[in-house]
Length: 143
Length: 143
DNA sequence: TGTTATTTGCAACTTTGTTGCAAAAGGCGT
DNA sequence: ACGCCTTTTGCAACAAAGTTGCAAATAACA
Ligand SMILES: [Mn+2]
Ligand SMILES: [Mn+2]
Ligand SMILES: [Zn+2]
Ligand SMILES: [Zn+2]
Image (spheres, each protein chain N blue to C red):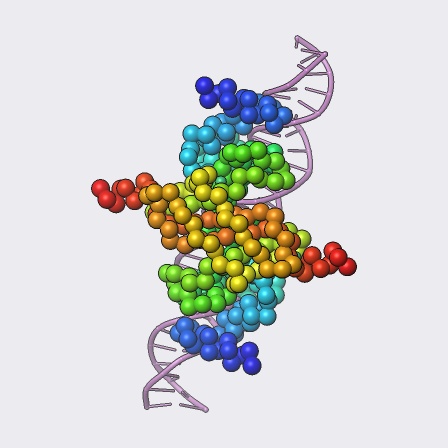
């Protein structure tokens, strides 16, 4: 089932169906948290580092994935849900980083609240990172 | 006037008054936008890269400065305004990155709105980065 | 001014980001 | 199924940033 979805996704964005691209999308789909380039390098270690880098860049440009900021400076990526394009991402939701498991997830259910900027400032988009303890780690603590 | 402030600040945090630390604080004070390590290296190029790195780490641990996330993955830093400590930063305000001049500033006047997370998630803190066009660049456009 | 703990500079190494180029592979018409 | 053409990949090479150990320099304090 998933393989067809992946091929369709790539075709939608006019991208060639290469093994690497299919595998990278596969990782994003089976993972429910944001993925960094080093994460990808570990899981897909038969591909060259540069190829993975370029695959991420391509997906980012097409609007297939979006950046997820991290408090460590390491950039993570996640699949876009809405209809995002290269120039505008239409899925402004909260990102949550757990300080226990270090995973960062997209919380699509919670969108970024409207921000009123001081006079003279123009709003383009926003990236909100909330840190705390995730549901899974919380449950573990209450054994 | 400023030199006394700087010495006082360092003493408050039980830090030795070294040239490097005083100069770094000086840069933060005279700059009204967030500063990255490479920024510091350019301005204070008579200090070793590692010394600046360690100075930032020290200030970060003491709660003198806070991290300002950036959409490029480059970490920037800014002086803390409130009473921040190593473990908790009490100055949760909006950060604004201008896509023209690339400067990132702390907008202390706008605090991060309260976020309601899904059940099971615990909130610790948040970092909100708004992108857009800053007041200065806006004014330049309207010549 | 001398003692001691802290800080600095340097060397070294790791990780990540980035580009050019030739070989390999995908898409497509035949 | 084949060949052509364009895109993608792997490799080499380099740039930039992060990180640590250690000996020399320096701040704090008596
Ligand atoms: Mn997301
Ligand atoms: Mn700030
Ligand atoms: Zn967790
Ligand atoms: Zn600007």
